[in-house]
Image 1 (spheres, rainbow, N blue to C red):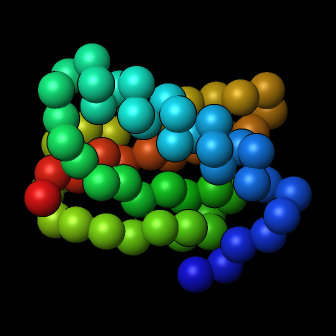
Image 2 (cartoon, helix red, strand yellow):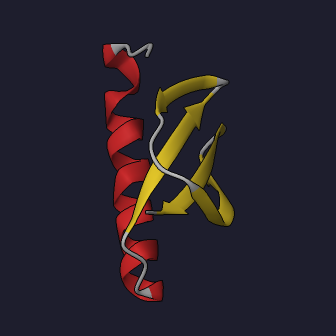
Length: 67
């Protein structure tokens, strides 16, 4: 699990977007966050949806899982 301080804000933005997405679709899910190929969190089992979110020039792949 690699983490570095300079991407914490972007991680929080991804978490916010995922929380909004989960709320919209009624999914109580956990997430894998990959930022520039670094896996920040890895949890859970079944892939429900994949959504790419772009902030400026940084691209995030967010995979939402259901327990």
